[in-house]
Length: 67
Image (cartoon, rainbow, N blue to C red; front, side, top):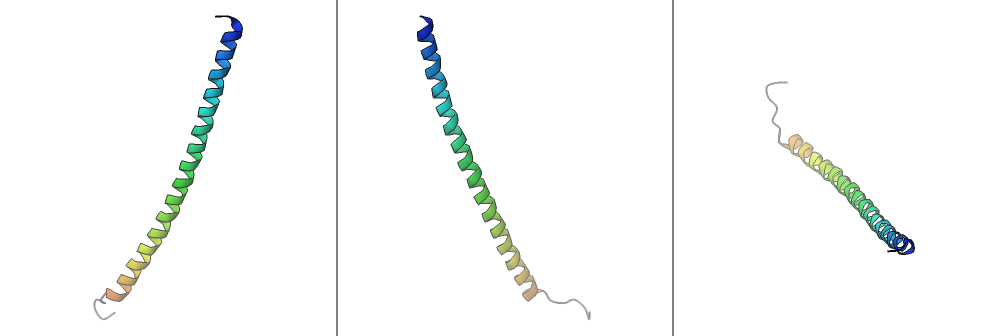
């Protein structure tokens, strides 16, 4: 195989690897965005749970003693 053919083959492989890297970077960004969204939803859910627990405690706790 002559040098020009080898160079062309290597350039083709480099282009393919660059394309794969671009796809992987895009997928990585999408996954991080999704993770951020999941974290936001988790925070909102935990806040709702805390409100419900506080409401339950305020309405259902019976005082002990004559305090």
